[in-house]
Structure formats: structure tokens, C-alpha cells
Image (cartoon, rainbow, N blue to C red):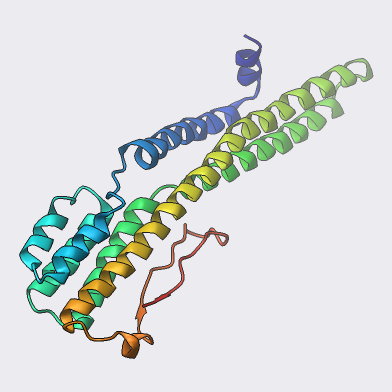
Length: 243
């Protein structure tokens, strides 16, 4: 009851903070469920099995194999590469299409996570704004009050104002902690996906060139899109990978 009473005493700012609290809780639940439970990953030997088919020239088998893992990001990217190779697509087309599909998969993995940082920052700022507004109201009220009532009114007003900051921080701290955990999980998934995609790209180039050396291609780059969240300047990016 104490928390409910303090919430009701906080005024309209508390309801704005409550909205962000509900959005934060829902987003945390959705992201944790997606990244830790619902997300399917290709088996560890996926690339090795695909390489065996590619090395034998069994492109139809390689395509069917990758199609069986279309519920994974790696399977979808590899499928695009196998389809391009099976249709006798050139090296530039292979790189461009795999890069395009990889960009799409990275975007899907990374979506909405950055909003947690925004929710945490806004909840903190709303609490501070509510505190400042409460302080202004309190000092304005005691200016016209009798000397005997000033101390009581001022202490009550300050207490209510500080409650707004406290509630803002209660929302902000879990949001920022969850953001760090989810961002780390996302980065690890994307790094593994990028590295394996690069290896599969190499495998398909070997097949395309009939086993020729790739030394002449070391200057080419496999473009990995930079990731960001709006104005979040501190978001990690994935650099260009040399293949």
C-alpha cells in the first residue's frame, strides 16, 4: 500500500513512467524469448556437411540441404548462395546476394533491442523532470504559506518530488541491464553468423572456380552492414570482413 500511495502522490508524471515501465517489461520479455528460446541455430557441423556436397558438385543436394534449415538465419543465407551458384551466377552476383541476405538477417536479429536503452533513458529523464516540477510547485506554494506551515509543506513537496525520481530509476535500471545482456547475446549470434557465412562464401567460390586458388581474391571484401539504433552513438558495428 505504501508504494501505491506514493505512486498516487506523484501526480501525472507517474503515469508516464508507468507507460514506459509496461513497454519495457513487454519488450524485455519478447527479446529474451526470441534470442534465448525461440531462435533456432544451425548445427555446429552445418558448414562441413554443406562443404561435402559442394565439393562433390552436388549443387541440387546442397540446395536441398540448406532448404531443410530455412528456419535458421545461416540456412537462409546459405540457401541464397547455393541457388546463385546452381544457376551459374557470377562471383559478383554471389557476393552481392549473400551480402543482401545477411544484411536482412542481421536487421531481423537486432531489431527493437535498442529501444530498451531509450526507454531506460527516458524513464530517468521523466523522473528528473517530475522532481524539478514538484520542487518548483513546492517552493511556489510555501511562498504564500504561513511560517508555521512552510516547513511541513516544503518537506511533503520534496518527498513527493523525489518519489518521481525513484520510480523513474526503478524502470530505468532493469531496462539498461537487460539492454546490455541482450545486446551481448545479439553480437555473439551475429559474429558467428558472419564468420560462417564468410566461410561458406569461400566454399562456393572454390566450386565456382573449379578448385582454383583464392589468393588473387584476398583484396575483395564481404560487406557486413553497420548496425545502430537511431541516435545511439555507442552501438557496436560490424566491420568489413576480408575474404
